[in-house]
Length: 443
Image 1: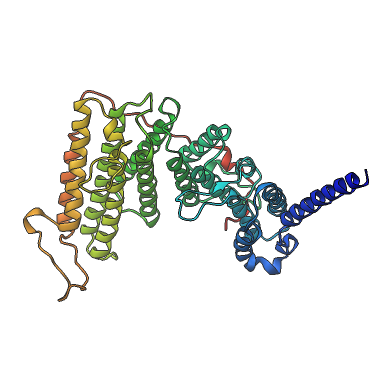
Image 2 (image 1 turned 90 degrees about the vertical axis):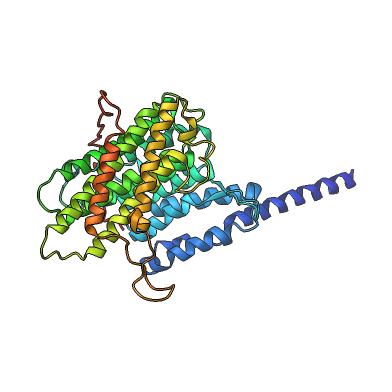
């Protein structure tokens, strides 16, 4: 009897010791109280990095879950405290988005498993009407990280809807509350949100129920094409603001096109391949038209403040970005001789007519890209500013050549449109809950 009592006592001691060790492990070493002190603001990003590495090193099982829960709670408190320095609150949100339940195995190629309990908090914060924009953006980065690392199926539809709403919502200054003390969100910053949300859709790869994701992305490209077309109709020279507007419109539409190429099409339903091709054709044609206007305007100025080489360089960058994005949107490959990727839009085309239209567009893209690289076919010789292989290369065309090529490309693309049919409609979402915010200055 005495032996049995001693044996049971030993078991109880071992259990208590194990529980104490787990509790000790789960305590972590981060002093979150110090995070709230303004004097430490410059050190927080480094502290956050150490937290993610040091506190969770060799911690697994129940101890890791307990530590994750405690860390999430502490970081949420910091993010919610309006008396804390904004940069610290932002770093707290970023850290929440980087919490992982399981580290990636070195050399395995697998991604870490994002901490599932963090995602609902990030989603709620992103939709919180009173949240400062910088916290919303930090939450959005965390949401995108969960799309990359993986998430619970129950959250997937909510995440897709949230990302889509962000992407399709157009910025409208007139609808932002301009109460005393409120800082309106600039359109360039909102485009930053939209570009980040596109990263999330790229990672998820789904075309959506009945092709919903595809439809919404096409609407974004169509809206931006219409915006560029409206700018192109202006008779006056572009102001600096209009130049920036064209840059942002092309960047957003290009990334939407690239995102379309990241989706998996074989299992998709409710998709009209002709509309996708139409949208790409219209977009590239509109880009050619507006770049043509910029070249023509510059050539018409006697004392242009913009050097021809600077203008050509910017136009080449714009065109190359758009061409590569649309090429990827069709083939999930850049301008190479390799076959189209397995789940690409191009390989999902069933009819020969649809394939021929897509191939015609690809040919036009290749021709335009070759001109940007090598100049006119009849004069493709290596040209440098000086002797030697390391000398900087000059563009192998001038402004008149570029103007003529853009006009030719626009004319070629115009012939690819479907005859006797209306173009896809313009869909524009002008208002959103994201703008009814009481904002702090975005960091």
